[in-house]
Length: 441
Image 1 (spheres, one colour):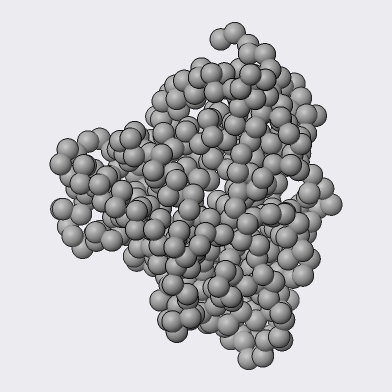
Image 2 (cartoon, rainbow, N blue to C red):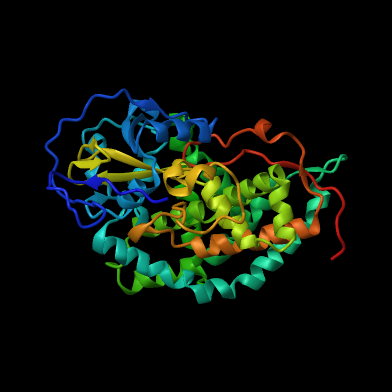
């Protein structure tokens, strides 16, 4: 059941002609509410998201280093904020950053300051997005299907060799990670020898529990590796997206600065594999924990694409996505968010919002109706460009995995799996499974 949106800027007489989505100016003084410190270790992600959602649609939170922010937790309000014209992505609107209140080595610095699509607004956002859009059209993604299937089969062929004497293997490390990493790196023309370094550095960049020294070193080393990628593609251009971006830059330097080139590569590599890695991990965990749902798929009552969509809703691969900044004081369901405040999108909270999904919101149900559509890939002008690729990778991977290993099961209880140490990414740090018997193929 949908609820009326309550995102506004200011004061306006209420409309009696449908749902209120007012855009006016607020003169209210915010009532003081102690901020909720987000757990940087990612422990109890859904319990934390549930507490925040119960507390309100917009809840003050404390980020590492004591930096204040607001988490938007409920489906309808989040959907409106994501597409609101008075909410920006560029950190020049971030008051705490402008005032020098962000500590050195802050683990979320990259999310605010990287140059690229995710921190650009208006014409700059359209310019940067246009440069990579052609690589992610439905036709281009579908053309990648045979290669994704080939990579998936090759990983499954080797999976048994990775298992210990009892048949247990870390599926996250040996399957869920190398598939999307291989695909995005081939798309970008990144040499195989660089991929593990890029993954290791990506993990630190998204780890909200990282120390200042770890954060500084990861950002420095990531820049070095990306500069090597660009240098290789400049010396030997290929049929890849990095070479295409370099060509666009050399044709017209105003289209793409060097910082934007490196920032775009960083975004594509981190988002292009971390999200799908978490999605595949979370889907396997959900199916193993709900064998009745797996049987529905095997019986043909739901498809693997349904599994992917329900996983995205039920256990979003992203928990709290940073950052957006109101360019004017913004009222969300009666809570004032002051101009320049950092806003996080709580996809895990919105995905289980009973106001949107009814009393069964916290249940994994692969036969669930697809409306309202989950927000795990965002909404509005910053909707995830790589969503079709992530969906295809996950669908192919899950179908092939459970066809090859129909008896696959978790090797430890689901509640004993260690969390991914971040409140940005939402998943487990490992996924030990018992492969059981392999079918012939």
